[in-house]
Length: 357
Image (cartoon, rainbow, N blue to C red):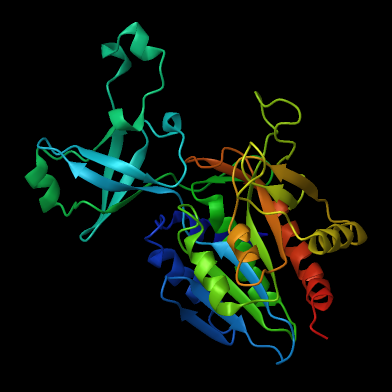
């Protein structure tokens, strides 16, 4: 348990928003050296690890995205205040007054996201959510020239600085559990898995801004089947109606059933029925708690992997997380460990089911 905890701490404390994944990629590489047969970085920046196995065996792709949601410098005004764009899905209300770092050529520059204070707002303004267009980043610079001398440039990546903390029981809180927890699961599987089938562990880039790395990696590898590791939005807290998000932290790994848009689950993944059945049966046979989920609020790398080339039977295992896409994502360590256990037990059955014979 302490091994996973320390791994999660190391992975989440690094700054690596979409399009700027190199720092976390370096850490993952160091954790995999000596455990896999090959490690390389493709043209998109994905880290691809290979356990060779035997020729003629079906190839399985295991996926987790490296990037965290972030921002990017859009404009520096004459007074040195910085306007920004999002790289990933944010709710404006969770962004205001957060502490951030701008990843400049001179290193990280700290700042805070500001806006008009409530003391100076009209009553009408107080009743509205402050939009990103009304926010700015204050790094303490007196003017644009000083901001530029510090190293800030248009296009610099930005992320928040919230640290890793432990709560009661086995609960952990950090930024970027989406999806460093998936990376930790995949790292542990590659470190521990013994199999004679070729296993490709792919740590992808830019999932949060369009599933980009997974699309190109799956096309290149052309796997016979795939499993994706990500997070699932838990609803076991106040102000969530029954049925809206029936996933709870501590309830076990989430076996994805379907995801996509709220209107009709368009643009998402329907988990391959055989993979779903194998995951459920494996969990029940080994007394591993699990949860099933139909998610109407988004999707994962699994969508583009499943549609690569002639199609790839794809499954999804997620860790339930409260307060996703904020500075304070919360999870249970037991869910992480059970996700690893479920995968290691099910992977052989999945490979066998999709054997070319």
